[in-house]
Length: 253
Ligand SMILES: NC(=O)C1=CN([C@@H]2O[C@H](COP(=O)(O)OP(=O)(O)OC[C@H]3O[C@@H](n4cnc5c(N)ncnc54)[C@H](O)[C@@H]3O)[C@@H](O)[C@H]2O)C=CC1
Ligand SMILES: C[C@]12CC(=O)[C@H]3[C@@H](CCC4=CC(=O)CC[C@@]43C)[C@@H]1CC[C@@H]2C(=O)C=O
Image (cartoon, rainbow, N blue to C red):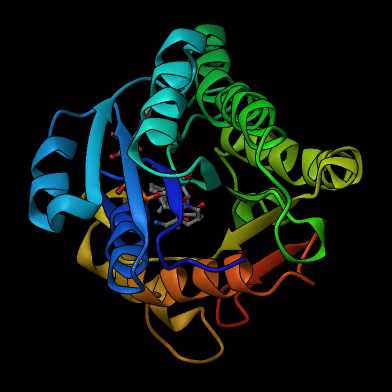
């Protein structure tokens, strides 16, 4: 799949990994529709110029995401792909230090945004892309979902987050198998620890410890390193039905 003059939806594009993907795709000649809950996404689109537009929306809402996809179809010649970066992290023990059980609504909220939101974006994007004229090899589109190393090595306090990301991993192969008949590829990236606003409130010594836990290089990943992998997935049509860890070799304790 080529990037030049093709249109991509990027969710979570107001910040961190999504924002870096938007910059990279525009630099490669693509058009982007940026979706985020936060209104800051409008400024991000303005910074990127005419190739970018923003549609504020919630990935868990069918109406919001349909509006994003409609905007993408109007912004170019059909929707070529989605990089679905919107997500939230949550930390809560099953039983806290006072013996209270974890909050059930908080658990459901994380799963709703990270897992149900991913399914919502995938289903609406795939329905739109299935109507595209076929390109090389009959390709009609590509979906990149974002999991996490926490899908495989979840830490204490990450029951909700790890379950939501493991669900994203679990959906990728059946989705790729099903959508192959439409020429749509599905991939997932499982990042390790990346330097984004999601990490902003973590104390310096905790960030240093996380960096030390990476075999090589001993630092947090940079958002553009993530965006470069997303770019490779878009342009390399043999990548399908797989989850790629991008983590410097870290295995969380
Ligand atoms: N930063 C890291 O170390 C890692 C991040 N990830 C995953 O990567 C993805 C991107 O994370 P970052 O860029 O680091 O986080 P971030 O917090 O910088 O960006 C996430 C964006 O998603 C948006 N968002 C949240 N809920 C939304 C909703 N319901 N609808 C629309 N937008 C919504 C937020 O407004 C925010 O702009 C997330 O799925 C995260 O779980 C995975 C592994 C490591
Ligand atoms: C630091 C902490 C736990 C983590 O390791 C995550 C971090 C937020 C960004 C991340 C996203 C991932 O998908 C992988 C894990 C992690 C680096 C979390 C913020 C608070 C968490 C904490 O303090 C745990 O005790």
